[in-house]
Image (cartoon, rainbow, N blue to C red; front, side, top):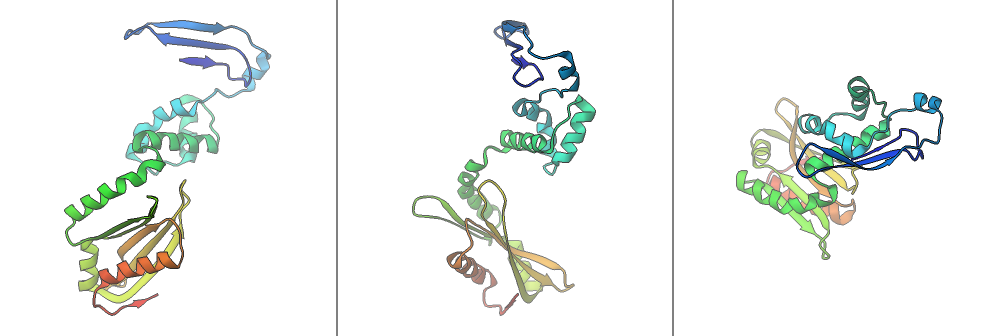
Length: 221
């Protein structure tokens, strides 16, 4: 455990460690020297270390993934007396998500398992996953069996396709395919995640979508 002064660059510091499995803590380093006046302390905000502070919101992130940084700022002031900036709160949330879900760079490793489970538990679904020759993720297509059946039996022959660039650490493009049911309400049919958006990606997406649609003649908008 390390405790430092709230004033940046101040040398005051305490370092302590637990003795074995006991509740006793032994101080190893105590540097009892400040290089500022008391007024600086009164005007400063307590130092918040994001790695440790993220532990406080782990349970909240698990139950409420949409917990927003602005709400984190307000809750920290009310509960702990710490004033966080929006950027600090955002980093706090990201560290908590990494503790719960793992690092984003490892998410793609779960895709083969996810595909296998979706096909095993949703018979009739269309799930496709592709990688480049050097093993990097390229395309991921999903159309659940219930969506395919609902489209064939109860939707109008009109399909709307849209795409949006994602802002996660590794970016990519999300494609969505939506149909319209008998009450003119939107009906989700399929989606695809791709590493980029080019002619080859569009062609791959439309080929997979054609398999889902089958022999039904449709209008794409």
